[in-house]
Length: 348
Image 1 (cartoon, rainbow, N blue to C red):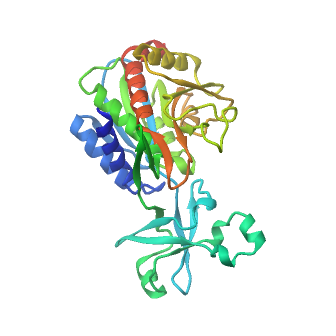
Image 2 (image 1 turned 45 degrees about the vertical axis):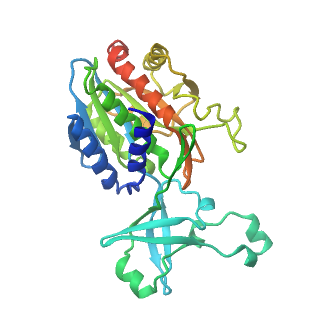
Image 3 (image 1 turned 120 degrees about the horizontal axis):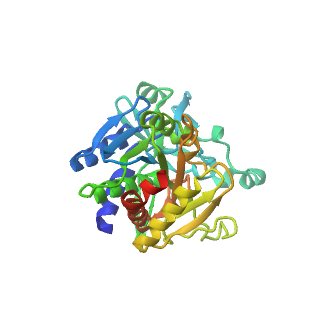
């Protein structure tokens, strides 16, 4: 798949509403695409989509999460302003002036996150970060109209945006982890006419941002011999993060993690696959938990051997995350090679 086509598919994924627990639009988009490729598709009880390409060999599960951070409606005051409760790791610093969408039973309602103007802030207010409880969503409607449309518990996400910045670099909300979802779709495209040496399960998990829930139940359902997560990791090539803290560069290729929670043989097989297809790759150390679906998957049943491939990302959990499509395309080539030539030996 060419880069332009990848960008179009990624934008389609980004435009979907997918706050954790409300991933239906993303799931439907992915199901339509995989259905055209002939994959066997099922959806489990928590809403994760599982696409299978049957083959002889070990069961291999490759997982990326569909959901994104966001909020749910907590309270509507007498003036019609909406107060929110976070879903996932929402940073209140980035919320003021953000445009957000409330998903109601009657459709979407747009609003802007309001905050006291800087002209009216006291010195101490300017120095401290806002508390989420202090912020509110302004829809421009009066209380009667808002309360008729919006109910407590309605989900809220950042208004979709998608910009190509150059050199395959894009800015958008929810690149964590729609960039990983794109990678899995590219794998599906790559392998549809070739038989991998593994019984392949591509899992698009739900509810990762609220406790890695979907991947856990999907792994229980699939029962894989090996599982590999594709998620994002912090790029340290900006003024706000140094290489010592995050030694990963945007556009430097997919990141293969090595460490205590990851199976050594699976990890080395991923490295061999990257070298076999001649792509640039990066290494990242994980001392314990990775903060990805793999943390839940590896503890399912009697334990599952796991690996982790990550995609560099700048400004994670903001309305304008920045990632590189070429990193996702390279990750797909790496994993396709792993599934074709390395998975069987790694599972022994």
